[in-house]
Image 1 (spheres, rainbow, N blue to C red):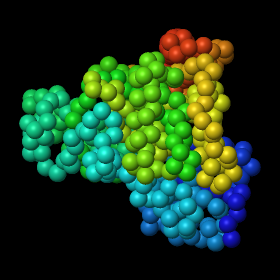
Image 2 (cartoon, rainbow, N blue to C red; image 1 turned 135 degrees about the horizontal axis):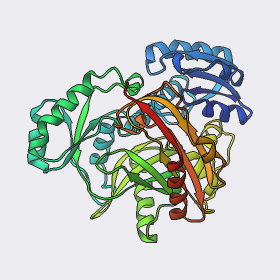
Image 3 (spheres, helix red, strand yellow; image 1 turned 180 degrees about the vertical axis):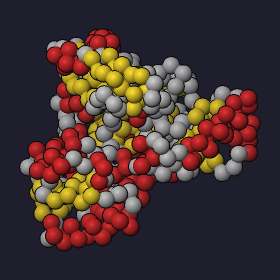
Image 4 (cartoon, rainbow, N blue to C red; image 1 turned 180 degrees about the horizontal axis):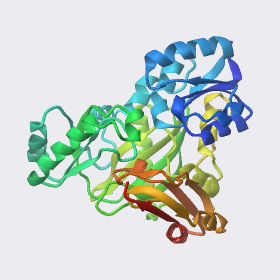
Length: 414
């Protein structure tokens, strides 16, 4: 028998578990064994420790847990858990986003195919092909021009994204892709299978994301977020909201996101849709059917009064009312990625000073002496984020950058 006050929560951070518990829900918690801390056990009724990305391992565990605990929905607020949660809901007839729809978001090739099959979304379609042989790179460049993008069909946080600037960059791109195929030393590879790559046209222009929450097919835009990318990389160093856009461009971004979600078949829950404002207008980059990272949840809650993570859990259990319309901003917020020189951490300075700053919204920094700082190849190689508030977006960015300069992470060669 289903219990309307119990949820199966798959993966995520201790913060996700705490939010579910704070809603007064009983939680059946599924987590990787090496990511579970014993102090979290008090927040859950029972804990299942397994590789939840392996369906053969997860299925018998959740079937047994359902018989014992009778949860009413499976939810995940982290990307590796989205497809497993959808599989559980399909298996047990619990409703929610089906696996067929969820997988269109987690598999970027399926997303591009879906967009190619229906009415055009955004200013233009983006040419894309699977990468199946080394010769495909030459052929794609000849057909669609340079630069172009190569990236894994699964994954997040810009991991494995390669920009091929010209014919003379093809050999380096091939070598980089081969290394990614065989990589086992990056934390990212434990949660994602980096096996298949795709090529797609490069679209110049600034990057934004549209944060939405869908209520039975009605897609409510929470905000449009401005993404600030580190020069010469694909790493998102900063995020700021509301984005500094004209009213017309902002509405075009919002409309593109709503059309995209309809095309993908998403009807419920949060989404974080990345859109490039290209020369011809908005162009879909990619999307995830979850709330964005980089402290975006804290920022949206502070500026718009909407905790999208808690809403995702309560809406899945039928315990929340839909938002009547788009929320109104009360100020602005920004977050920034904390980085350091590659090597072994010796000491960390300035964090308490940042926490004490009245403009600070949140600090998410878990690095301690002895930790290894990896080369910065994606957001996952950053050390955490800090965020700040301001009366407007520019002021929030300035406050965030000021506090970032106060943090000093000293490293030595590993």
